[in-house]
Length: 256
Length: 75
Image (tube, rainbow over the protein chains, first blue to last red):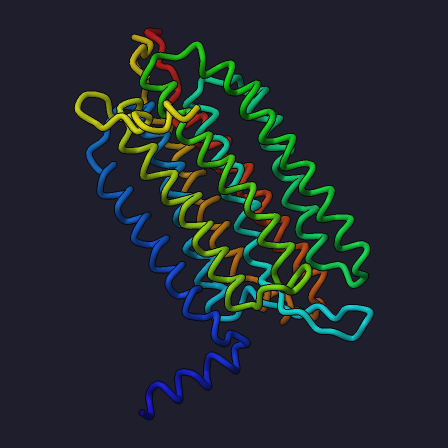
């Protein structure tokens, strides 16, 4: 019993409490995803395939580092609101998103064959969305927090619109396998990304309807789906590996 | 992905080195806040410094990835 008690005490000293279990699981999940992608791409020699592997492995690797930094308390701070209430803010989440979400857009943009200009516009909008989301988390005045949340959410809607219309137009000119994979990944982004602002709103940084334990669980599931799930679908698709790979769109394309 | 150009490509070792360096920078940035604070910075300046490091690392990674395979000419 000595070891768990000592461990729990150390975690509390670091500022990480019950939600630490989800941060640990997030770290392990991201690491497993990264190792899987590395193993799968070990023998790849095609330059175009290599790009997708490098980007997707980086996404998982940075996310794993971010979860580890939050688990050890490096990525945690406190914000005292004007009301005197003190919020625990996992700022490393935002640093992670600032790095990984543009790489996700780069992945899907390259898959669709979008122009560098369109990919650049998407990444710029994405950085704006993350920074304004971060501002929402760090503001001390509630009205300012919700104002920045609204700005960030509007930026996200622009990104999703741009992804469907502009990048989708580029994907429409690609071969059938690429179109199928694009449709599945686009739908994954549309659903997963749309849940993030809702999770923020109901979580401790917003209305406080869900505690830090539940909020961390929700973000971990979203992160694993949006990063590892995304990579799994992309790197197993016929659009990337060709030949005998499964066609992920068999069911989802029908839903489009 | 099926209609690849016939132009042979080669790995750019400069881009590969950049990719490794900027990826390392991104990972280090996530753990660097206490180090910045140990130099006397309060949370917010140290935090914005971390974000700047992440932004630079992102730009470096994107450029490195996009130039990882340069088209090789016959010259």
